[in-house]
Length: 247
Image 1 (tube, rainbow, N blue to C red):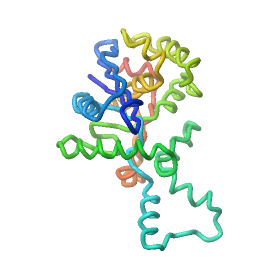
Image 2: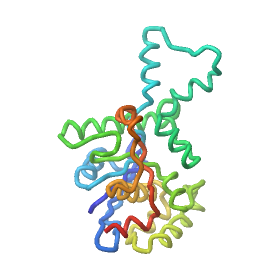
Image 3: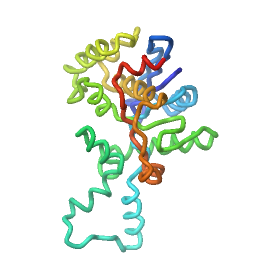
Image 4: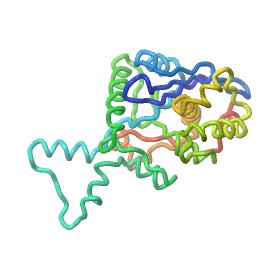
């Protein structure tokens, strides 16, 4: 199996992509690139069994409804409800709220944070994939699945708070190697120790493996339709070691 991981940014300089090749009892980091342009990202997604992308796959349905209504000047405003309360469903998708409830980590909002620029790039990538005939399902059953490195690290009992700081990144790599002695970072280890974008891409590729094996969360039936529009974050449901034990 080949899995890929993409730490997506609005522009190529902060975008990283990693490829993990899974063989019997081992996972090899065969390629790791920074400054990834769209053509390289599309290559990764179309050649891997599954690709994990750290970026929202869509916007909250209620946010879309709100701005559509705003175009005509008739926005729905609940009476007697504090603005911070009723705006919550406009800024956070169903999957964002599910992730926060499970892990305590709140994903950035595609509608209220600067990650909206990145979400636009992701939307264009997914649209291009679909136009080329590749399976695209924002719920994660297609070629790509939405992942969230910080929450994934927490569920695997790895450093997840402020781990992107230069002083903490090396510790994360050390802990990752201890928890996954079967993971071969090869000549890319120095880059993982100095670039949080590169390390996040590797975590995304690991999370993609969990999704490919059915070892990650999927939207429950009552949220399936909403997730098809908003996207769904796949969180691992087993320890990190299960990724290699399932080989």
